[in-house]
Amino acid sequence: MESVTLHNNGGIMEATAMMSGIYISEKAKTRVESLLAEEGKGEDYFVRVSVVSGGCSGLTYKMDFDNEIKAGDQVFEDKGMKLVTDRKSILYLFNTTLEFSDGLDGKGFHFMNPNASRTCACGESFSV
Image (cartoon, rainbow, N blue to C red):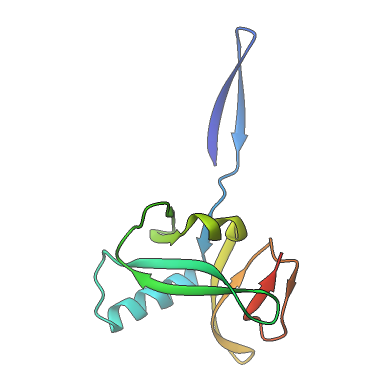
């Protein structure tokens, strides 16, 4: 949590603000590290997450590895992993957690997005 100090009529009032960003679960972090190692990508690579138009619900997640920060990028760090998104996508991704499942219900990365009002049956797309 981030602490914010506010001044009020000569007195000091302290408020606590929750950090908002993009997060990654331990399981997803472990899988990302494994994939980066398999692909021979160094420590300068990070996870780039974005939202693009498409899918049966209107919006689709996109995830890549990248090593270049672009103008307007929003950079977050969780559990020692850098997560980067563009300015447009962050509007859809605040407080989203990147998860990884290797169970019988499906294997792969998925997003736990509290902003999504509807998702499709396959979980590949969403709407807000």
